[in-house]
Each structure stands twice: as C-alpha cells, then as structure tokens.
Length: 336
Figure 1 (cartoon, rainbow, N blue to C red):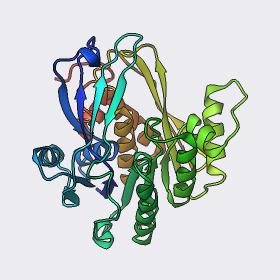
Figure 2 (tube, rainbow, N blue to C red; figure 1 turned 90 degrees about the vertical axis):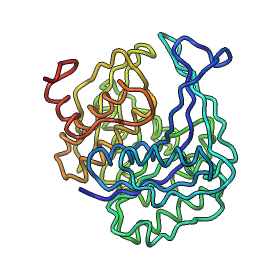
Figure 3 (cartoon, one colour; figure 1 turned 60 degrees about the vertical axis):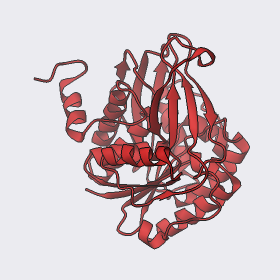
Figure 4 (cartoon, rainbow, N blue to C red; figure 1 turned 180 degrees about the vertical axis):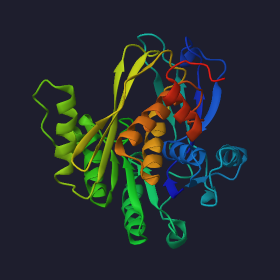
C-alpha cells in the first residue's frame, strides 16, 4: 500500500430532498466533503495511508470535519485549525429532466483566506508516493494560484508523483483565469484527470472533426500529451445523461500510447451524483499504486464511481473488496 497526501478545501454541504426547491426548503441533509478529501477517503478505504491537508475553524464544525475524516481512517495530522469559518454550499437536488443546482457560501473560509503555506513542507511530503490536488484550490484566490505552484515544486523535490484533477468550477473563476493557471500547473503533473472540454477550453486544442467516439477521446488525449510529455497517465469519464436520475458511465484512460476503456455502467436510479468523479480519481490512484494493469485500473475506478452514485453524501463508502465483488458479480445481484 502507498502513502498519498491530498490538499484542498472541505466544506459543509446542505442538500434538499428531491422535489423540493431550495427557496422552499425547510430542512436540509448535512454532509461534509470536498474533492481532495473525498479522494483521501477512497484511498483510506482501500487500505492506503491517506493524509488530508487543509484548514478548518476551531469550532464545532471544524471538529465535525475531523471526526468525519477520521471515521474513514484518513490521517488528519496535517489538518490545521483556525481561521474565520467553514465554507458551505447548498445543493438543490435534481430529478427527472431538472438537473441539480449549487449555491456557494464559501467566501472567506479558513482555507480560502490563507496567504501563506502553514505546513512544514518537508514533513508534509515525507515518504509520500503521490500528492493529489485539483483545480478548485487555485480557483479560490490569487494567493492560492501562487501557493499551488510552490506546493508542486516542493512535492516534486521530495520525489512525489503529482496527481491533478482539472475539476473546473465556472462559479469560481473564468475559463481564461483557469487556463492560465492550469497551463502553469501541468508541467509538474504525472497523472491528470482531464477531458475533451478541458482540452479545448484551457489548452486551445482544436475540436475533433471525425465521427468516432473512441477516436475522439484518443485524439484529445494525444493532443494534450504532446505539450506535456511529463504526464504519463490521462483519465476521465464519459457520461450519457438520460435524466438527473439515470446516467450511463464509462471510464477511459490513456497511458504508454494506448487507450483503455471500461464497460458501460447504467446507474438507475442515482441516489447522489456528487463525488462520483472523486471516487473515479481515487480508484485510478489506487490501481496505479498497486501497479495493476491499466485495464484493471480503469475497470476498478469506474465501478467505484458507479457505486458512489448509490449512496448519500460526497464520499465513496466502499472497500476494495466490495468494489471487486461488484465487478465480479455484476449489477444488482445479491451477495450471500
């Protein structure tokens, strides 16, 4: 098993029930989550030493975050306490043809207002195999755009592999701001989660003009790797959205000049889509740490993501054995 450090913001999520508009909601379901924290939880579930670095306030919500992470076995020794508040977001659950909607209340959070790195970087990255972060962190402030690059340089110096999920959030920054920051980050990256829209909007890659779905995916992976040969693995999912409650999900991966694709999972009904991409990323990193074949890596990661859609909350709650059993038995069969 390996050691992975993930770093980013974790927030309180307040969700409506399906069929209730946010403006009419009288009660909410509460969960804690964030992209990097969710990846850490997946990896801890699979038996890895997963460390989550962030900053939360010294109050009941901050302590609840720590308890949430510890519940899944995540190492919170690098979780800083202090600052003004915990970021919050509200999720209006989608149903049928109406998709989910998010309202952020995260400005001024303890993590977002950090102006300097408050960790001892040598200690943070000691004996670490992979450092994982996403594009959400540099989107939070101009300071975090600079601090992100500083972290990447320190992680590379310590011998870490760098995992980066583009994870663009249009409500946090513009495509122009994102593109500039992402292009500064990618030269340090070894494993990258990025899809066709990321390639077009942030890297200026011309649109694919053919008709083959598979060749289109390969085209974007090849074009993204040309300016960044340091990235050894690209991965992403292809999702067919029939409704907010019914999706088809296929995982894809590009490594060593070859393309790998999982089976297509029909997810019907979706209980909670939030965190599905993080569960996929966690599954990819698990497979890479275990040195599995690339086909096994993408099969496992996609199955993990499909399972995440079946439970409430932001994080994957399944062990390696449960994901593998799901793959072996197939969808919906009873385990006896």
